[in-house]
Image 1 (cartoon, rainbow, N blue to C red):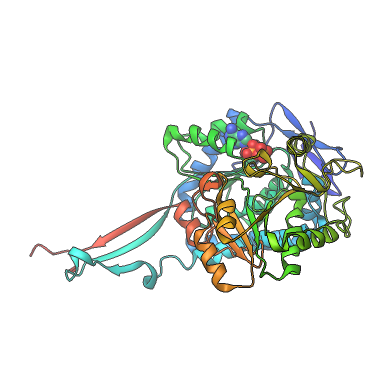
Image 2 (cartoon, rainbow, N blue to C red; image 1 turned 45 degrees about the vertical axis):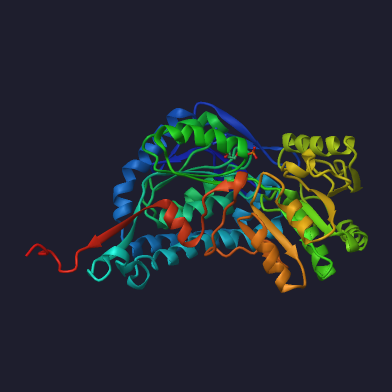
Length: 497
Ligand code: ADP
């Protein structure tokens, strides 16, 4: 096996990154490109031995990193951001070849945002521990006695971060940056369908001067390496983004040590379109749900439209959706690239064919696209029952359903009637309605007349099967730290006198 592959002119080390060194594995797996199915190279296939080595490296590096001043940690995170910014083109090209998402959005949106992830948490770190924020006198029964509370955030320890393939570097760094900022050391395990940019991140971090062992990257297949990571007694935090079955598996594995978990899982989010909405905006929001070929956990895949405007909405939706260009994600003109893997394509088509067999109607799409490779036609299904699989289960492909509602009550009932609670989007021209409806929806994030706007300061996560916990801003530090409150007596150290 070669230790280095070249993807679109960019060299990528295919080994693990453990304790500041490249480490090979005895076995490998083949990484393929969703664009044309070609093999990109052989990647180190880690198991329990590599998991233990990486956790040991993270544990060894932890005391010094935790003791590193906040200013120095922030400086290093900014240096990583500088490195990302210098390599935006390389990162974008490698990511597109690896996971098939659009090159133009990697270039202009995703990779700059990766750098921003580091800058944001570096700056946020310096806001912690400010007196006006976390020091306060005791109230209640202790009122008047003058005790002072002081809240501090202690780094928790080695953190295992397990990330998915739909937005590999974006989602990895959205965990890596706060974990490092908090003073934790990291073992990052990217998805086996998109392992490459995590390896480039290791290079960038090393070049930025991050000490050995502070960030470790291991490669491998799901539970083959995952179980040894998630059940490890020296791991103090696990943050996972992925599917519900895997989350259950990880939670069971973490139960051995009661390791705190942050789980960002799937969704079946609604887009509620009320008759008072700006219809052009509502149609734009609906068509936007095909972004990343539908492989977005936040996607509002259930379109719920008020009956009185359903025909007009559907007409305009079709007009717009059929203009989408599907094809090679490296082309500027492409709107929809391939789906990640033949297995994922099978899964998507299985959902659609079962829905059609159960009586659904494909207004558009409903099958693979004949443009070569792993492409699925943007699909809109109507005549779907609320309790049907296609309405209840996450497809993770360019497949939307459309249902109608008679009034606000029915809209809310349908919107909330799945086991998920990740996000919801509303299109309405009535601010009071927006307030009423958002108060009744179960969702971690609600967008009103907009979609996918995510400020890193805001809490992010899901309710019900969509996840456990919230990350973002203060919430990230709460998760990655052990929060400590110190109560000090009023008169210093001689209170008994
Ligand atoms: P999907 O089914 O969409 O591919 P998964 O939730 O299985 O998503 O995968 C997300 C991430 O979880 C990947 O990095 C994958 O390797 C990892 N993973 C899968 N199974 C396990 C496991 N048992 N323990 C730890 N990580 C796992």
